[in-house]
Amino acid sequence: MIQLVIASPCPIKHVALFFIILTLLLGNDPVQGLSLNPFESFLFASRIERTQNESKVKFSSDILPLSPAPGSKSAPLDVALIFPGAGGPDALTDELERNLRSVASGDSDVSSIVKTFDWSENRGSVLTAAFDGEAVGEAVAKSILESLKDGGELRSIHSIGVSVGAFAANEMARTIYQRTRSSSYSSCDKPPLVRLTLLDPFCSRGVWGNGYGASNFGRDADYAVHYLNTDDPVPTTNDPLPLCVCFDVTGAKERDDFVLPEGETMHCWPLAYYSRFGLSEEKNWQTLPRHGEDGSLQRGTIIQK
View 1 (tube, rainbow, N blue to C red):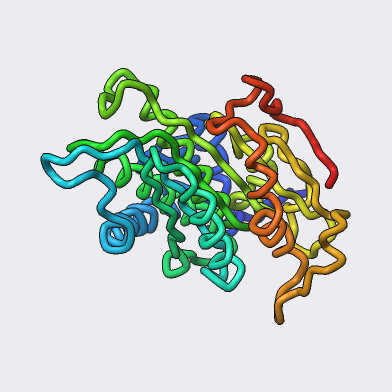
View 2: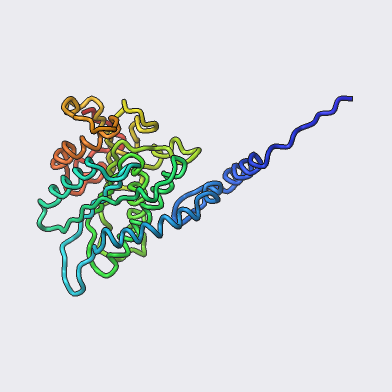
């Protein structure tokens, strides 16, 4: 007689199989406002909560105040926040912040705040970085809205993400977009315009999220723009995002004169291009662009520079 003996899988395989089945049965589970499947929730829930608490403290110390002093009247507020990539702020993000300030200073009827939010202390491994970024972005968004409860009109929010900072930028835009369009929002007469600019964004989220950026980046924004470079070595950064207007700057003539910073790859070129040329090109846009309105470009448009 032949006996068939099936070896029992190791405990790790049992655990992985259990969470895969849970994911298929239950779908995603909101954790601190983020959409996670049960496996991700099990792994990252406590980390996300800690990251959000730390981000709120950092926002309070580095960015606030946004609202006017009690009893004073202020102009409508435009806020631009830059979320750097994995290495944190550098000479190119500093340059972008300066150039954004210069552009913003031209409108005397609006108060402008331009800041870089350094979230590098909360960025973990390649496995967790996307979730870490989303936790930071949501916490910053909530802090912005909370700070304006006592006064101040938020006219626009411009969320800018570099590389893996795209996850923080997209989540900040998404949270503000959704919350200011809910029936409970009453901080101003109308919701702010939400802009999202992604500079060679890293698009993979966790183990199963290779297509996450294409499906999510720019979905919850009035106007979303993607600056793309297709010949750098960073994975998941080389395809146009369908929910954004895409500027492919791989073959831009300005690249011929670009001096690559020491230790960098051409992954940084979209950041440099946007800072040095993209901002000036935006002067031809509507002040508050929305996809498909007043001549503004539709999602999915690809422009070769």
